Length: 169
Image (cartoon, rainbow, N blue to C red; front, side):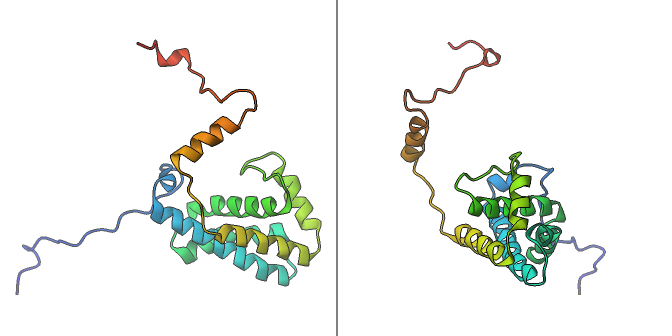
């Protein structure tokens, strides 16, 4: 039997979980993006149950990110992002003009959702969950280029060049 004092430890430490402050790794890491997606899905599911217990939409959202991070194995630092994305998805389900994640009108929209009857709030959550679970479509490079050209009816979008980039040669 080998002596543990002379045998090197070949066990590998698990990679540390990414947290939002470290980087934007979630933009490029499919496994992390999948976990975040699962966390949002779990939060949407749990919110519908909380509404049955007479919690309004915003109260059922509050703290839900920590619950879902714990159940999906994400670092708790991701909780605010999970809650914000969930709020955005439900707000998007309530309007034809989806708000951005940090849009100034989002708090007013959340207040308006809270004022609706519980069955309406639940319907918005179900609609958001259905959209969230729909298979994503990844556009081709040609489709992305076409979207850029479709943003202006008069001329294609031109990326502005700044003098900070230096002279072109």
